[in-house]
Length: 415
Image (cartoon, rainbow, N blue to C red; front, side, top):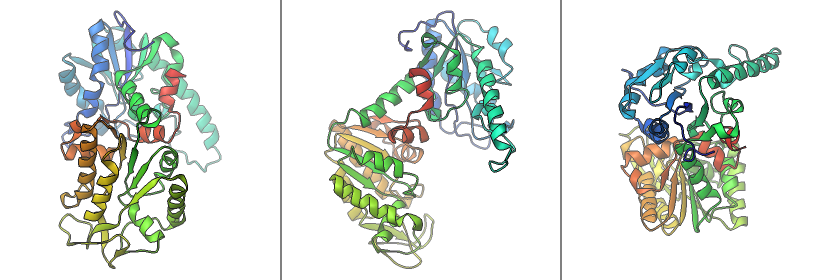
């Protein structure tokens, strides 16, 4: 059963969304992208004549009630976006009566799932090294099943539309699916789009395929880099990891960020790319700063010859040209991670050059997927979100999918 072929008329439908939206100090939403992303799924249920139970997490309350992370803060915003008054259940595990009372076309938003440790399935208040931890974990797994069963009891149909948490085997993203048969559980529209976008990048490749991996650490991206090495034509490695590669090749990097225990790994990646015929693009120059601040003094220097006391904070002009050349003409593009400290306006040049090259290639027919929090923030900051093919809502989930891992939230429904 798919969301398109399902008629929700007269049905109670529980939908797992990702409403983990950023709030300011007054509890007002600063970016409602995730709410807007879930609207097509929620609206389909209501348009068919079903009733909606919406569930989500927010932040990391670590299994304890914390008003700072209450979903009560977003009820009005969700009501406004949906065009329907949304009721609120102040305790997600004690909402049976409110769910049962829902009439067709009505909506109930449950309180933050993570106020219960059972959602994540991790024992609280006991150290992993404690001999009693194994038993506590086993007991928590049973409690997690009970929690998922309670949530499932509210509805006739389960829809998972939270790609951002699809890589977690949580009660509401995976375990709950066990309590619905194949005709009563499905992926929402947002999940379907995410799955299709990942599939386009990994299995439906039009060449040349260019992947751009940024960020500060090689270690956090190694699984992805290795999986992509068998698929890409061009691999651009940028951001803070530039300086680990520069030092590995005998360069001077001043006080730039560097993983000293990953120098051998950096050299292995260079050799592996050579052996597989992958065009590995690394920065040749950088914008170095005398402090980590937007108003720092700067100079353009070779990435392998940064003066003492200075640090590389952005890709230099020659490097930007290399990036642009590799991206232009590509037919499949994946971008995860910026090329510099883009949060500082004076160090956005490298990331902007990447964004502009991707936009140009997309206009010429490439499929471009932007994923991971910082890349998405980048493309939004530059006002270029409408110039790429797809922007993923899932950070960790997207990265694990690209690594070739099976995502529990998707497997629970598709098998």
